Length: 225
Image 1: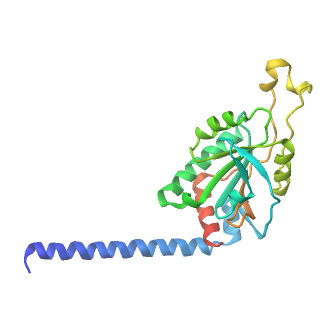
Image 2: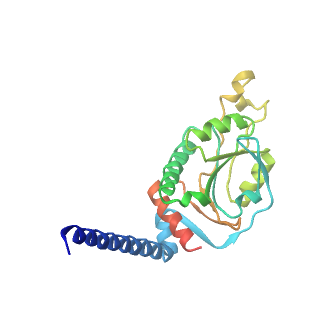
Image 3: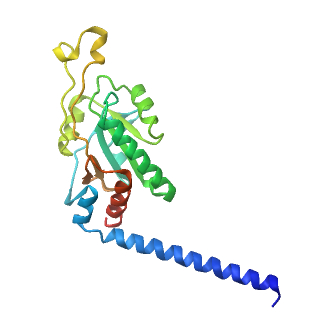
């Protein structure tokens, strides 16, 4: 066997060993994720319900003016977040964590059946144009939804999300004239809600979760589904 042949055989064997090692590591990671206990998930900032919660039919409009209904959450994992584009703190912070998390999923291809959706609790100011610009600053695939206050509140109640209503035009907190759109904030829960591919409310991530914890918990929940 000449030197070139030996080198070729060695490289082939090294490649086979590398493939086997990577396969082993992937399997062990998946097994570890699948056996993560509820306590371990809570340590990461995630809670999974023993019995997922069903949702009523709903209809919203996305940032491109297209309808978004319960059919859009079937066959994919959906992470819902309630917020608004004028939010000064929790919304941009959460969406930043979600964008880092989503880019991590992209590296493994897991983003192909995952969608991140923000439902606006401020329908008076969050038009489709405003939502499109805002969501695009975090990730081009993120979806922003708008609907009537009643539509938003109905879905929020089913997902155990609390939020305050936008002020009425004659509310003292709303200001006057052109200033009305600039001077009020909306209180709302900041949990990230997990909807499984059956369209059922599977659980949630709390507001303090970081993107690395979010990634680990999400992969564990998927593996155990």
